[in-house]
Image (cartoon, rainbow, N blue to C red):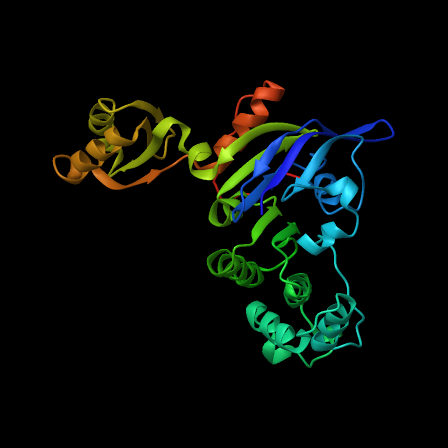
Length: 319
């Protein structure tokens, strides 16, 4: 089910939360919303699920205007907020049973079992929620969101606060949903590597405005340029190695290694040369694509005028 955001504005007093972003979320995609704290991500999600109304512009879910639709939006959109909580004394199964009855699901027992299996909580279903880990609580929240099989899932920072095992488990669930259903999944995250792994397309928000949008592969391609990092076998080999790699691109000597910026095709030629004619000069080398983080910083640079930062694709966006 397609989502269409058109020139949406939202202000809280003197604070402009959203300042006219417009974009579409394709039906059946897994879509990422990126931005630093205060960029407008959570505000956008609250408008998307009908928890608040925009001051201007429209948001449509499958052609349905969210502002006018009222409760019908919640029949189409399942929302997992960043912070969820359940009565500690209830079991996971009891929590889902309550949610299923509220939604009036006729096949609620079967749906509860299916959702417990999807999120990996079948064995813990009859344990009290007070004994759940943070990751288990997040998965229970997702199970509650999935009960009614909504065609759209909106997940606000779904892995925030989880340990690495919890993050990996959540990723597997999202990938399964993408693989086995037609649901449109919209998620926000501070972790760029997470968005690269899970999402087909992404938008970057900054101070409520749209800074970049497009397919993840297109945004991180950086016009096809890559960086080849080459470490000399010894300090004595550095001058000769420098002479070689300069033939293939722009070279930066970091002191520890030589970094060669070149296009993808040239990188293949350089790697071939390093592995054949000049292997004695080389300790090791690696080829690194710019990643989504480069696109993120470039989008913010266009606004701020700062030089783009070059950091690893696994690093979090600073809070």
